[in-house]
Image (cartoon, rainbow, N blue to C red; front, top):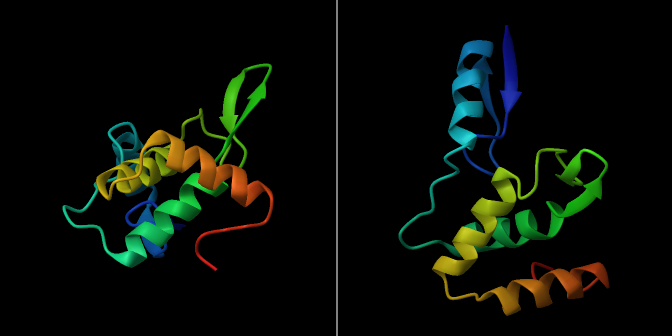
Length: 108
C-alpha cells in the first residue's frame, strides 16, 4: 500500500510504501537534516514549523497540538535547528511564537 508523507522534506509531498514509512518514522528519532546554508525557503518553513507545532499539556504528557507527537515533535525540533543555524537565539524564537499568537507572523 502507498501512503502520502511529508516526512522526507518539509513542504514537499512524497509517496512511500508502509515499509518505507516505518523507516521514516525511525528516522524521526534522529530528526530532519539541516542544510549547511539554509535558504530563505528553509527559514520560512522553519518559522512555520516552530509556530504551528507547539506543545500542549495532556494527562499523558506534553504533545504537539498539530501532529499529536510527543513534544517537541520532529518538525518543531527541525524548525528550531534551522533557525539556530541562521542566528536565532531562544529569545528570538519565543518572541516569534508570541507575536504569531497575536496574528503577527514573519512569513506574510
